[in-house]
Amino acid sequence: MTEVRGSAGPNGTHARRAPGTPCWVSLMVHGLTTTEEFYGALFGWEFETGPQQLGPCVRALLDGREVAGIGQLPVDRELPIAWTPYFASDDVDHTAETVRLCGGTVGVGPLDAAEAGRMAIGSDPSGAVFGIWQASAHLGTAVSGVHGTPVWDELLTYETGGVAKFYKTVFGYEEEPVVSADFDYVTLHVGGRPVAGIHGVGLSLPRDRGPHWLTYFEVADADSTVREVTALGGLVLKPARDSAHGRVATLSDPEGAVFSVIESPR
Image (cartoon, rainbow, N blue to C red; front, side):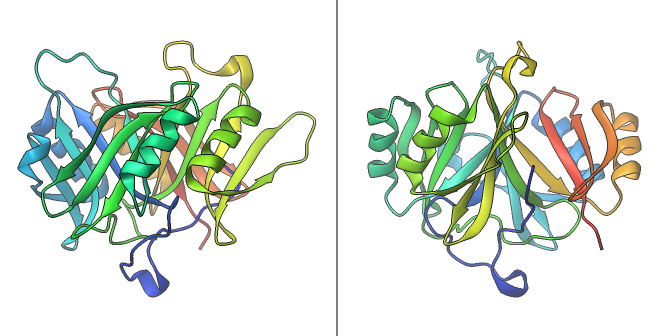
């Protein structure tokens, strides 16, 4: 992680995102009610019912503003439980076709989500899953920079070279690689602003997960959040530690969805 930024507009206002900008995160789980209880206690989220076309799902809210989505998997579907970032697109059908042409796959969609917008879910050539969102009524995460809001998305993969070219072609990113013999990292920029990162970790990538996107959530107190995760039935995968961008920890919820938290410097 080399940069941390909020995704809303100036002064936290809600604005349509430029193509390639992370605009939403969602989670598919087996136990929707218990997952709501976990994140409600951890981040202070409240919930409202989401678009019926997407099946049983809710939108997480902070002070009435949308933060993230959680949906329920069909009983017979044994899919990995993971947070999925969505990247903005002005034309999801064109973006999905570009994903295919560049060696990725599109597993869901493109399809309409009622009046909210149009979406697809794909994966890059290494298998990391991500979403594509063409906004209509629903522009995405409506608040940033406070406890419980997504603040950064980072792809953990084997190496950055090939996969960075994929995302650059699909979303038009500008790239800023870290020049280091022992640190393989590329920051993705939209309009000169860092929006996401790609971290090549080689053989230290977890064998049971493979390449995957990791979402960071802003928290008021990283150490307190770590303790609360344990009390709520989650796991601490990497304890709270200081970094150049704040105090961070990597955690998982009771169903195994991995996420990181960061207490940004005040």
